[in-house]
Image 1 (cartoon, rainbow, N blue to C red):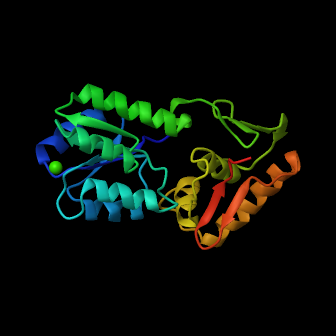
Image 2 (image 1 turned 60 degrees about the horizontal axis):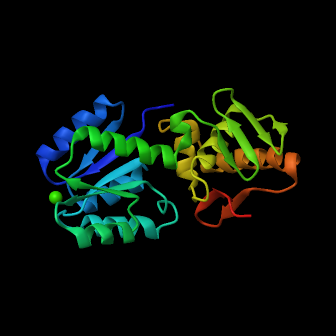
Length: 230
Ligand code: CA
C-alpha cells in the first residue's frame, strides 16, 4: 500500500508547517494549499485519501469547499476533517451539517490530529488498516490476495484485482475512468481510457459468473461505481 495522500488546506504557514511535519513523520504524503480555490483544483487533478480543511480561508471558505466536494458524485464521500477556531460552537455544528466527517478545534495537539486522521482513514478505507474488504457479497482478503463471492473463489488478473480493490475501497462512489487509471495503473502510465472499459468488462464477467448479479454500475458520462445497495 502506498502512503496515503493528504491535502492540508490552511492559510496560516506556521500551522501548515507543524501539521505537515507531524503527518509526514506518521507516514503520510502531504500537499498543502493556502486557499479554497486552489484546494478544489488540486482535488480535481488528483483525489487525495483525506483532506484537512480550515474553516476560515481566503477566496473560497472551508465550508464552501466542503459543500462543493459533497455535491459532486466523485468526491461525495471524500474524507474531510474540518479545522475550526475555539468558541465557534455553532460553526462546529454547521461544519458537520455541511458534510465534514470530523472536526478538530484549534489549538490542537499534532498527536491528536494524527490519531484523528488514522481513525477517519480506517473508517473510510479499511484496506489502509490491512483488513479485508467486504461489499455486495464479495470478500477481498488483501493479505492473501484472494477474492471470493458468495463463497466461490474468483480468479482475477492483476489489473482486474486492482480495479476491484479501488472500487471496494470506495463503495458507492463513482470513479471516473481517469481516476481508475490512476488507481489501478499508476499516474505516469499512458493508457487509453478505453482500456479501463475492457478491464471493467472482464472484472464484471468474473464477478457475474460467481453470483449472477452485476455489482458494478456504469454511470454515463461519469464512470463506474460498486453498487452497495441491496
Ligand atoms: Ca485560516
